[in-house]
Length: 245
Image (cartoon, rainbow, N blue to C red; front, side, top):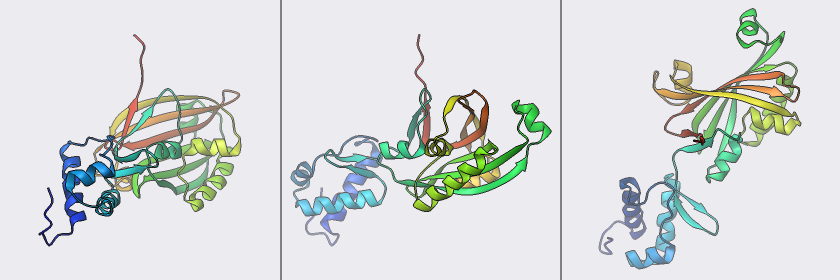
């Protein structure tokens, strides 16, 4: 287990032992580690030593402490249920993650004939907004949105506020913040090979598989206000759908 005669500090020995058990699957993702007292007894060390070891595991991104419940092995994938839309920030918070969103692009354009033909909208002016969502300083999702004018201008102004605050968000959060009622969201999920720009943003290799969630967001009058593609890293996200038999 640990050697008190070793030159390596006890807390590092405990941390390395627990890390090996996490990586080997003895403690799978999402499971709770033994309590501090149980670890003290198991390794025959002080509580201070155990706390130092647990802090090191947290720093390395292997565990997450949950107040009043204990320390859990961090889950690397974020499960998103397709039945209910969840904000990016709420999803991170529910798993004990910290994150933020960056605005990569915002521009206003005239809607092209091809856009109107493909998407069936009658917009004459649109806003393009590209966002990247980060979890624990790692990019996990890229959003590319085409938004109907004047919604896009208002959403961009709110996005800048949230970006400055360091708050994780997607366009779904922006609707809520601005009091814009969403009537319906149509979505489909496809798997694609990441194009170069997406791969670079998500720290992937060009051609790596990504999940794409295509969304058409309708307002309370059932008129389309946004067409969005969300590019999700497959090592960070899974999409879940409960189907009735």
